[in-house]
Length: 307
Image (cartoon, rainbow, N blue to C red; front, side, top):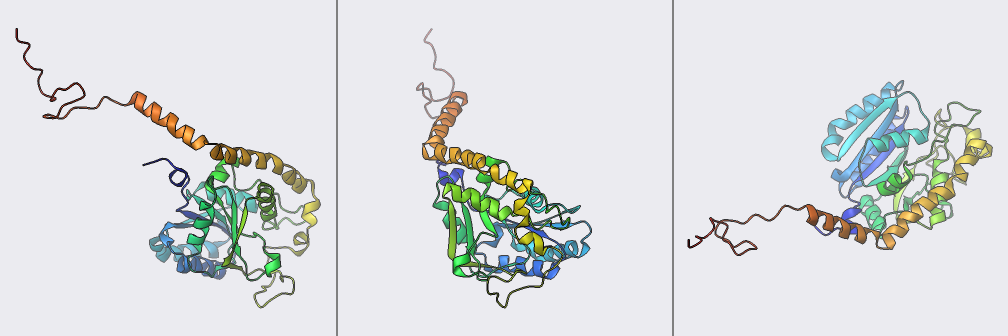
């Protein structure tokens, strides 16, 4: 098989990472929508994190797995002590191996049939697969679209060593594990690279508690997974947030080096080098009886010497 970007950087399999806490019904709705609208559900893995003290979520995932494991590529459940959101995403990504990674939530609903094909097509526009792709959220107005949940390639994750850096929760609210501003960090990174892509015709609704501008019928009540004062940007004034944002140029430069390597023929040079190494260590071709080898022999006993 020819070693091309399509073969070296495939985008066939998709991992959907879902941190969840005490929303079993919403989680089931999300997973069913993933399956029901995917063109190839057997290429989609759903990985869920449930806190150890959240028995209901673990039981719900076990119930979902009875049907989902036969229809999805895989369903994964991890559980442990409550952790910050960025660390949960990184942990889930470490237990999956899909070529595209979605950082998702348990209160989203996939509404467009073939969303997975649309995502794959978007990544194929980039030879190096370095991009942030996200879908239209109908709970937001058109002018306010933002990658609250989106897709990156595993090669991007491997290049910077994680999906997200570690974002501590807001110091004034210990339970604010869901308020990490990871989406702001990732959007800023890929905007710097000019590698963001919104799929305007592919809908994934976020049934969020927060009223989107004028609000709509999908507003949800505020639960313990969020905290209002942290949402209102106070975390962005902390040294921890400032430090994470200050690291962005370094990560952008790292990804740009990978982009330049691919664009500058790095893949082709590596292929040529690998082929040369393979040829150097290849065993001599064995002749088959009755067929000449490279020396003209038929592969049988040597002819008589005539002595």
